[in-house]
Length: 439
Image (cartoon, rainbow, N blue to C red; front, top):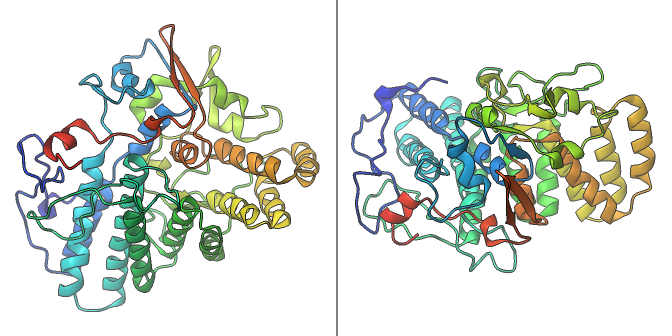
């Protein structure tokens, strides 16, 4: 993806702005008004290119990584690793609140201006549908970074994030409830459903939304909302378009690559290069795999002395936001929540058949078929952990499920995130709080 600077509508001026209640941490200071379909496509391309790599930072907070205490870039990630969110070292990477709202501003240009200016056509509808989809995804990531996990009983009162749907500098940006934000996400996906015309994007353009990518997003959103039937229905719609899995017995390759048969949306890097140089796989993560029968282990990990480097990520060809594996595991999880334990077992077995040796699968088939609902739930969640290592799922999955205790050790000191710790919700970045007292 290439940024088209001529059509950049908004420039970040976080440091220059010192006050005002209506500040969202983004200030537009210059505009070139797009007119044609090509112009608006370039605007949205810039929005896609701006989408941040925040999920890589969430991996630092999980049980997936062990920091290299001698790495040059350790200080960039150290305070995230020890969950020191209040007054972190100034060199610490910040979660990209600002960048996600920048993406939203680009999508608002398409939704509010492009939809009115452009003559109706399939190409125009596809473009506006992508904008709605991308805005929904940005809000989904924002609420799962900075808002409480969705709880049907409390979502209406739980503090969420600001909602910006218009290009309006006079708007007062006060955080809305978690429920309001989720309602907006669903509203955007429904608008996108009406507009998208492309079922799947061609390789190389699959950083753009398509119908299958939108259904995948909807399935994830509903899963987090505990709307099991809607999540399963959306997963089935996506699988009706693409249900292909990489069989690691035949092709031992990373399924995260943009040209993989599993690729649905190739937008984000879940494990950036700087972090890859600074971390190893944790003992917790390594212990989740059967090194004899799980074919993912030699594909995902490479021995480095007594530790293991992670081979995923840190390369443009591994951009991955959605892939078919997630749909299978979501379908299995939701089937179980809907008390269809037989369907859950059938679905998860159809998935793991592609991830284990023939002997390993035969043994697991017997084990899975004998599981009760509790054991099967744990197995499905552990399969998510194994499958999506350092792809950005783990922190969000922990938030929506057990919020387990995590212990990190660094330079001989032990740091603990207790079960249900308030730090499972990340505080707004300091510069955002400074410029918007409402946060």
